[in-house]
Image (cartoon, rainbow, N blue to C red; front, side, top):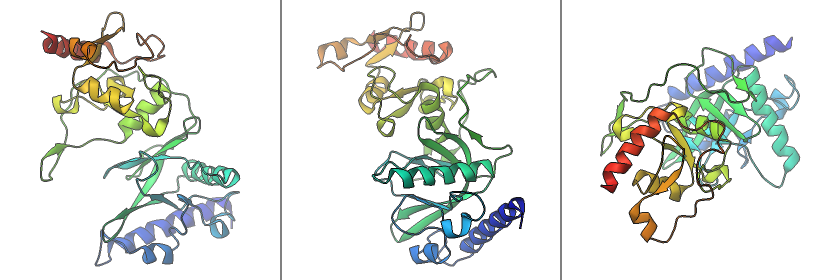
Length: 295
């Protein structure tokens, strides 16, 4: 069997497994023994590649299932996809082989199962690796088949299309209606800013948060140019208008209130160290809000 034929057969097998899961009477809950019985995941490691089966298709195999616990990494999981961080364990060689199996899934257009532990069982999604960045150690898996091949280890370049600063969002009905958020936003912010806080210098990717310069509540779009990558504390202070960026100079400006409190430790006085700062339109919108809060 040629590699191309074997890959097509593997894709068909995964699509069939997912179709059968959706027909189960307990769907969307899936017992874990059903997950393991079908060969979608096994063991405690985050990435499962079933090397005995997929290793015969390509060296190091093809990732089959990703286990999402939400305990160790700040992955963002929604109905549309997941930001998934590479494993970093004591088994470095095994980690690298599992990471290569993710790359193999991306390059060959093979979907992967994302298994999430929830009360009463597991949620199982089938997704395609849309983008992978080895330098950052992160991938984005979309739960809808992409219209173009995955992008793997391609350097970030600023979008050329005009900025859509304000957008209309779908609303999610919960006990309190909330705007839907796209996990791609955090992934693209990580890629744009290089995995360190823009103002504090914190460089632990799993602790960083993607902040909207124009907030979601005000219709702010998920364009990466409307983002800043911040530490949790800096993010909360930013959203409370305790500091802002002067659009003309990119200077970090603290509010009167913040100046009177124990100082949030800013490593940078401005954003000139960023190769790609946020869009000026977005900064001007936020600066206007900051000035209103200060008056």
